[in-house]
Amino acid sequence: MSEPLNLPGWRHIYSGKVRDLYVPEDLPADTRAERILVVASDRVSAFDHVLEPGIDDKGELLTTLSLWWFDQLSGADGGRGIPNHLIADHVLDAEGDARSLIPEAVAGRAMLVRGLTMFPVECVVRGYLTGSGWQEYQASGTVCGIPLPAGLADGDRLPEPLFTPAFKAPMGEHDENISFERTVQLIGAEAAEALRELSLETYRRAAATAEARGLILADTKFEFGTDEAGVIRIADEVLTSDSSRYWDAAAWASGTTPTERMASFDKQIVRDWLAANWNKEGTPPALPAEVVARTAARYRELLERLSASK
Image 1 (cartoon, rainbow, N blue to C red):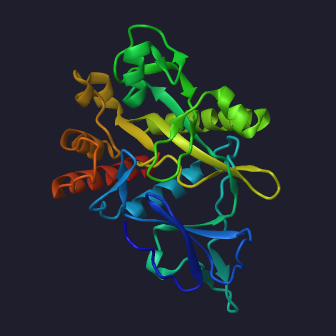
Image 2: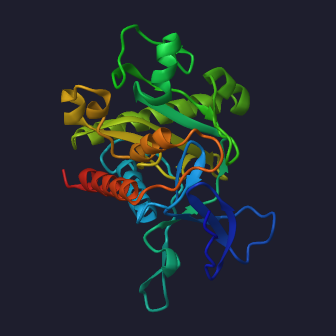
Image 3: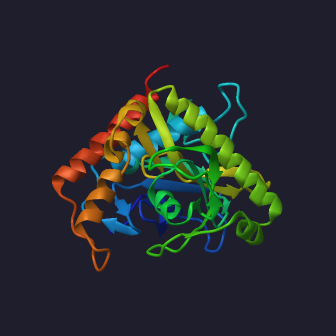
């Protein structure tokens, strides 16, 4: 994994699979940060491993898409605003000119956010049957223990979107799918109900937005935290190519095989190549240049299709 950057005025505190977190360098130790700089790298992960090389411009593409979705979910369209973690990333100087608080070295791939107390739960919503859900369904007729009708095929739309939470594991370990009842045990009934409601509402709104642009939002995952006032806010990334599966709607409607049907705008290209070329033991092989280029092109196309004026 690449070393964190030395950013004037900021102190590195954490690196995940894709993102690096920084706090103001003068923040005393063991003090809750009011401001956090979230920097998206070009790293790509699959099967709980960070791979080499990264995807060119991925950090900027993911950040731009997250910011676009945060704006779409803000309530400006007349819907209920979904509170998020963003805070102003510019201030006015003495002359009244706007000055960016984001270091120039990470401009375009960083967000300035408020510090939150994060829930230890990934809020996964599945609208279509695919991936690990399809594997489980073939074995038991369920997805994350939830019974589904018989006769569904890979890529089919589910009768209703499913909220299937997961317990967030430390880096390098697998997240653990958990029941809603287990979620209640972890964070309490009120918070669990709130996360389920927010997750399903956000998914439905995003799926409708994607559908209007010829895209299917097959599934996604959200992370939430609370601010000092107790308000639940959506955090980290939202509805990006890394956290979501997007398919081409026309291909889904007319495809004759799962691969044709689920033309994907995410890192499925990476997953597929790695699954075919690695037994999941030891260090993953380096990604070929062709896989890197195709993945970057799909990330870029998704952003362009979603953000086109409607």
